[in-house]
View 1 (cartoon, rainbow, N blue to C red):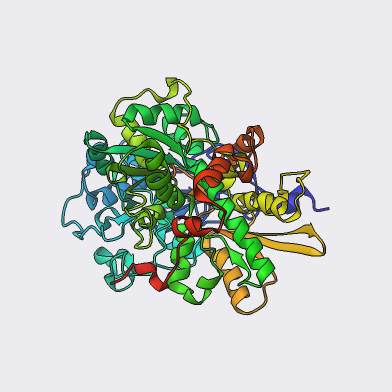
View 2: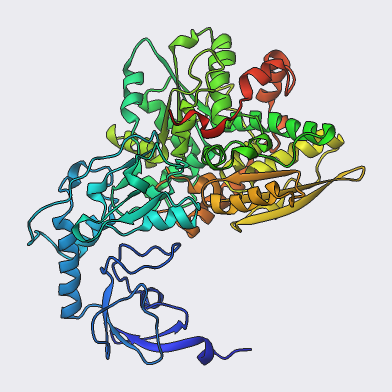
Length: 582
């Protein structure tokens, strides 16, 4: 066994003795000692670059100040993080950024969530000493999900690294030099003209408002204010786990009842649960898997509920399309069902229904606009807002979220199961599908509903399920598109022996979606995932096919899973580029 002295180094930071692993940088060592060195380009989950220079510190014996986010620790090192030279240099660096930055903080969507704003305040900057020419660039609003504002870019390149390292897409790059430097897609194209997945992971790591979700709250307000409209809302499983963070609750707090109460106070006519539609999705997807296994259909079959994943396949691997389940996502199934089944039962003209989704995902905004999703005879989902947009609407009305009473979803599309709840975590769709597929195939009840092998934050997870009669279903789960691409290439090379695999475009699944509250890191994602599984364990029903509202839907109106009406309303098709480019 290695001794402590062989794995750590002893150093001092601001006169404090610190023992840090040899692999640490000065910034990481300072964090271990409870010291916060300000930084902008550094992100704990991304490769280190050291280009913003905000984290400069003084190391005795070094010829100049060093970037603490990339400078390695060493035995006996003496570091000063707040010497007069460090303070003045750091302040100058930030002032130079501010000199070339818009001064619209009061109106900015990231006001009070902006890292540049926070650091400037912490450094005591009350005015900018430098004045001169500013970067002028057009805002890119061509993408239905993500807005890019180059004038607010501070060239930290977090978006470049997130897009490359997490998703393998390399949409962004740094171009030009000096004052003309800018981060943008190749050839200056708009985000609607490149192979963007619309996942919004670039926005989750952007320290300013250079990348944000497209704000559609005005459309929701207009709909609610129209007396001729009947406005219904659905909320994804991850929203109830994340929304509380916007109001000071700790990560992983389950705020379902308060969320429902807030939605009613915003003025929605019905508050429904996307988990209901997640149970629908499992009914269709599990039966589709069993049908493919029994009839020799295209295998492996893969999930189709992550729109970032669908965009990825349609743009980069269209030859893989036959492997996608034809089942719509829960959002899509809900939209089609609410304007047919619900409208008929409630006696409401579907032309008057406005269907709103609250989603953790920016790519859901594009999914709602897909040309295929009009099977109800109308646009199935009219407006999509993210968890962050939902929080802004609550704040606009001055609703005291923390002290709201606990309220329940409306029936019938508010009744759901634990299987629908776990859709929010990577591996959740797979686990929910296996709970139903096993019992439908074997006719036996599962003794243990928890498929632990597909849970957790490993990039790719594999498992096998013995269905009896010599049939073993092999499955895999991947989150982030970089991991998913490994499974795609393996499949296309004929090397995959899976029957089914699940993909979520975002780290951790929907809990880490591009529209979730800031900040989102591994610890936050894990806390949200733990909450999701805790909620599942407490549910009365934990299998989609045992949801009484789903049973009634199929028995009285929908017919059999994969039947004619289900095929028309609940299934879709995919095409190269998905109709995105003209």
